Image (cartoon, rainbow, N blue to C red; front, side):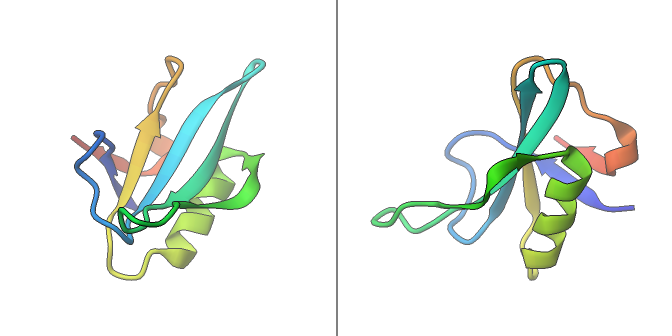
Length: 87
């Protein structure tokens, strides 16, 4: 089972990945953001909304050794089928 860390603003080092999950209509969608150094813009890929499972798979494929952070917005509740979420 994959393990993720709950996102909190300002506590994520450059190079980290953040999966942001939000509501789009009646569905939960997400995208992946790679945090850049302070003098650069973050990278967002693939640039379109995805289902949560696809966003987590994309993040896992790009993670390296860094943890993956999860940003739950718009009252999105964590689904244990996505993995384990640490605080």
